[in-house]
Image (cartoon, rainbow, N blue to C red):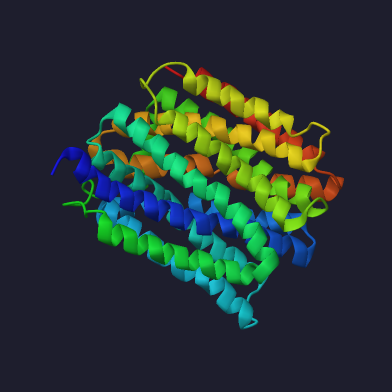
Amino acid sequence: MTGQAQLARPLTGLLAADVISTTGTEMTAVALPWFVLVSTGSPTRMGAVLAAEFVGMSVLGLWGGRAATLLGSWRMMLASDLARAVLIALIPILYWAGALSFPLLLVVGCVVGAFFPGYSSAQRLVLAGLVQDDELRLTRAGGLMNSVNETASFVGPAFGGALVALIGAANVLVVDAASYLCAFLLVLILVPAAEKPDGDGDGGVVEGLRYLFRHRVLRRQLIGLGFIEIGWAAMIATLPVLALHHGGPTMAGWLIAAYGAGSVIGGLISTRAKATGGTTAAWALLGIAGSSWLLLLPVPVAVKTVAVGLDGVCSGLFFPRFFAALTTGTPAGLRARVMTSVNIAISLPGPVGFLGAGILTQHAGTAVPSLLLVGGAATVGALVTASARG
């Protein structure tokens, strides 16, 4: 069997699992906040629901690096998919039983978020193993995975918005739970298990954080990416508000889907990368900042999808390059912990964007202040990250 043939089967499994579970997740990204916004009339509560998952990523997700180290990347992916399927299914079950309170919804969202950092780092490490740590091949493979993932991010919100109107938010959550079960089976059947866990299990995420703080360039990059995360989170929290009186859940789905569509394009371009260096990443960062300010233009909501899509294109160009360089540049024994630490560090400021946008919109009665937060945070983040290149 040739090397390409050996790679095809597990890569197909990874990609299929990713696209199915991400489609379900992105459907929920429309269904859950829309449910809260319409049922409570409170953008602040909607922002809190969105923020809960990111709080889980940052706080409870601290164990993810150690878990991925102890279990191994493959087992970490399986455990995460199975646990998230159960947790997401709890929401409609409790709702139908009349036992779903707002605090309980926040708790479930927080616990679901706890699995994302470890899962994301495990997925990238499995992919790195498949391409044998070749940075250029990993950039291209990462671009392909990004495109597949963001295809789901494009289809999921659009389909989710339509399904919310058709069958209701609770049933959409059932579909999301089923998508995690499908992903679990695909990885179990098609992706080979690692021969042994990654590393010795000592130190957990703390060792990963120490590694990050010892590297000045990487430390500054993460600070910049944290600001970009605030801008992205504020944008995601503002889009349903823009659609509330201009097309309803269907328009909300299309606005969020535009980001996924743009990321598909950026990821596909990354699959054709000729080198790992160059200025592409820096230009992509500036594009993220510039596209954020376009959302303030006085144009119909449907036209704003262009700005959201451009943001996605630039993200699809930057992140495969960033994570490929990070993965191959990190000692093998520390990768699970460092990758999880990076995912946590980037997602940690996300609740600031979600809650900030919700509070600003509710008190101002307009989306303009939250859009200023989007543009300002993205610009600061892009400048800091680009200047950190060493």
